[in-house]
Length: 554
Image (spheres, rainbow, N blue to C red):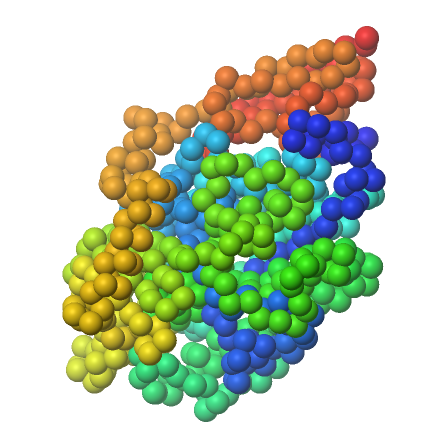
């Protein structure tokens, strides 16, 4: 019964189960580390029958961009609706920072949008992957208030009768590590060895049904055409094929449960390809991702046609305001994205690159429909630097050796060379972003416009990388101590539970007897004589202790 009562707290008002049932279910399917290597997006090599079929029932959003070219910062922006540079999540990654692992501490008002959905009566769930910078990478390491269920137990079937759900499923088979050599070959990283053990135990068999051969792949001009490169790219395609099968299984299960026509299904990826000069970079190969949205007829926007293409610019920070609106939840004013269904199309999207593992960097990018501008604060720092984990890719090690011996051409060498302070690319004539036009007199007006757009954005969102990571960390954890969230104060009035916390920005949770933890939004009816427990968490801080009282009999 306590789960049903929690559903009543919707924006300070009351929402009945009948009303909740009219809201859409929302299921986000997020593959890792891949660009638009899908048949429905025009890739003639990809073997993706399930996604191609889904695309026929969906809208293809062909200009969707992540806020970073690497997972943890990108996931921070997605889950908060805030650019990672304005919540302390910009460095890859916080938990393994060279200055000591830490958790980002966003501003007090910032909440993950699934927590807002949960507070509005949704059953929210995800799988093993978190990686929000104010959490660890795995389930159980983040604020307990975001998800009803996380890890292997999460599923829409766990919700209460009539309760809408929001699910986020991650498909790890396409991760960069899946292109690397498997067990027995791990030259640079114990982490790689550990990941390969996990993959061997949990991932589907890929090679048995690998439909793509090295001879079939089409290489961009910034890769040398060698057997090693072709083999790695072909392996990437075959991992994508395995992910496609997994997506097909989820959709079949959704249909078998009679939920396909009440669920908005979103399929996308967390950033671009897990390949060199893609993942971790601000080129389109690193931040441009495919996105499909299947709109059930009852929820399909009036101006949206099934099996269509939408070319508007969409940023990952737009997920939060868009999905909240679809769920009937008022979006907080602090969000930096916009509702891409109802708002006027964007003129620009923005992305950032900061420290990558042990390598300091700071780059910012702005892109419109035609041009990309990238500014580098460390203009001598190439993106193709040594990086122990990435160097487990055979093609990376080969490219490094070819560059060292002068065997790469100009296009293939750029990744290993200093980028300079400013880069401007005409994506219409130069889709691979190889011809820097920043010094071109013909493009000085465009350069000035894009430069101004970036500066205005940085002023608007407040770039926390204006200070060093060490200074930022001292602000998070004064004196090197992680602050503890205060235990909530429990009180009762007229049979209702009231919770308060002395910690500004803390999220509150409670449970009745030995039931599941629920998010507290406002006064909620509880059974007389029940054991009521409460705790709190400020994102990035230590969780509070638990306080327990018995609800009085009135």
